[in-house]
Image (cartoon, rainbow, N blue to C red; front, side, top):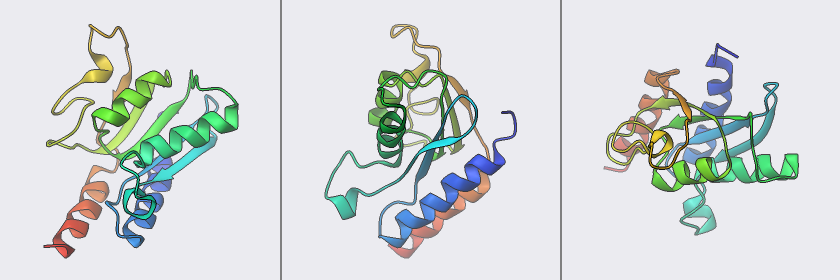
Length: 150
């Protein structure tokens, strides 16, 4: 797949759901090697009282369950905000070879902005990162959310 707009649209719809439950509006989907959605997630830390309930982790869990394996070789994760250290680590552990992201996270991003753990030569992984897909939409959703809370 070379046009990630539709996939990011699915992730954006999930991010809206996070905002509706008063959580940071981040959404993620996992696509199988053929491009079918096999995992969905949106931030649920507040609702679940779970610090690990990030969109990416929830989407990875659902995808692993769908495939009945923790190895998500050949899959792609599409996420509205650059993954944090925890999520980047989970993506590495799941063997996901490609991340498609919308907005960069200059404060806590771990796939190219603040850190780049998914392409760190010391780890030996070579995760492809495709950034800036529908970036303005992803960023504006986050900006609006935080402006409402100030």
